[in-house]
Structure formats: structure tokens, C-alpha cells
Length: 326
Image (cartoon, rainbow, N blue to C red; front, top):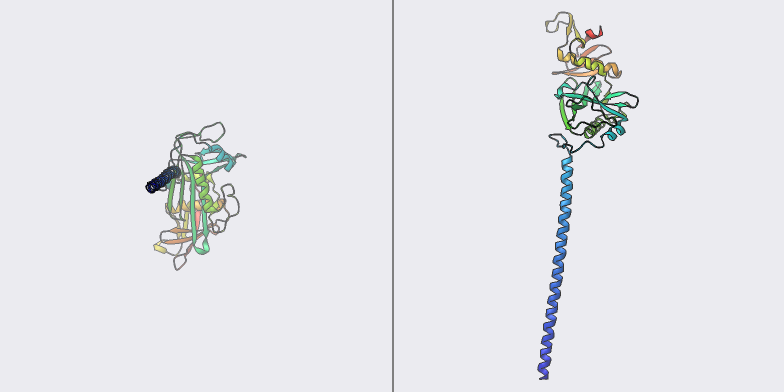
């Protein structure tokens, strides 16, 4: 009996040990499952947070094709400090001197700022990359345009921005004498529009907007000073635009010896180049594309030379002043 009892006790102990091992294994499995559930929950939260952040970032970035920022949900905070800090003055819309590029198709006014000395600067840029020795002459236009009917979009303290005002940064570039290519980016927020304007200016000119009067940067476009009063007059059409003419004395195309008018498009372009040369002494030689030909126009010597034709024909040119200058 003693042997049987011992055997039964050994079997009972074995069963108890097996049961305990099974329980411990079950506990370990349960803990592992709990850890897995917690890990998956944490991962899901992190993923949702990351997805939300990515979505927000994506929404705040203007779509390239549409090039328009998301509508503002409230008044444009930070606008005054941004404009004042970056530009040292107050912003206004100038409808008197500003001339929106006709190629833009935009109905608006050029935005400008007034510095602490009371000097207004229109956000209307003409920049050029000119090297007559390489027959190279390219332009880049950048304008910040205020769209809509706002007549007094001031950034002065105590004045709020109008909610329905929209802004556009218009760019046009190409060889001088061609209409080139263009891009219009629209914004509901002036701060974003001005940043776009500043960034593009620095990219092309190599200077910040505040340092635009500094020496030109090699290999970059050069900032061109514009006479906005004359530019405005020129935009009004006949009576304010000089008539450009070229001299013929070689019977070309059967023409008798005389002065001949430039065509209307060539005349407007040459008048623009002339006005730019009057405010930028370094800008007196231009290489102008005209159809299949290229002309070196010298506004000091008052000549034009066909740099593509084998004969390199040079002709005299002249400007007949408009009525507004008489």
C-alpha cells in the first residue's frame, strides 16, 4: 500500500506541476497579447497623428496647377508685422502709377509699399539678362497685383484687411521681343503673396527686395529701374508714345530713300527699351528678337544691326517725340 500511495502522490505532483506550467504559459501568452494590443494602439495613434499633420501640411500648400492658397478662415493674422518687418513701411494699392501687364489678363492694381521716408515703391519688377557679345537679351517680369475693388488696402495700424481681397503674383519671361511664357499664382493671403514675390525676386536677381539697389550679381538677372509715370502715360496709347523710324537708302524691297515707321508692336517695344535706357545708363544696347531676325539696337548710337543676316546690315534709327512731350 505504501508503494501505491507514493506512486499516487508522484502522479498528483506531476499533474500539479503540469497544470502550473500550463497556467504560467497561459499567463505569458496573455501578457504578450496585451503588449501587442497596446503596441498596435500606440502605432495607430501615431499613424493618425502623422496622417493628420501630413494632411494639414498638404492643405496649406498652394496647388501648383491651380496656384491658389486655401481660403482664409479668419482675418489674415500677422500681415502687418510681416509687411512692416520686411519692408520697413506701410503697404497700399497704387492705381495711379501701377500698370498691370496686359499679358496677364488680370483686372487689378499693382500693390506697393511706402517706406519710413514716404517713398512709394511699386511691386512691379522688370529684370534683364543682357550680353550683346552673345546675342543674349532676356527679360523677367514679376508683379504683385491686388484683385477686386479695394481702393484703400492699407497695412497701416488700426485698419483691417478686407476679407474679399485676392492677390496674384504674375510672372512673364522670355527673349526680348517675344511675348514669352507666363505664370499667375493667386492667393487669398497677402503675406503668402508677398513671400512668393520676394522669393521669386531673390531667385532671379540674387538680391533681396530690400537690397535691390545693390550691385548686380554675376550670372543673375539685373534689376531695372522704371519710370512709372512715363510707363503709365505709355499705357494710355497714342499721343504718349514716341514714333520710331528706320532709315532706308539701299532700295531694299523697292523702297525709296526715306524714313520708315516701325510697325505698331515694334514701336511699343522700342519705346519701352528707350524709356528703360533713360533710367539705366548701362542699358543702352539691346538684342531684340523680331520674327526670324535678331537686331542689336544701340540707343546711344541710334542704330540697329541685323546680327543674323549675313550682311549684318546696319541702319540709322530715330525717335519722333509724342505730343505729350511737345
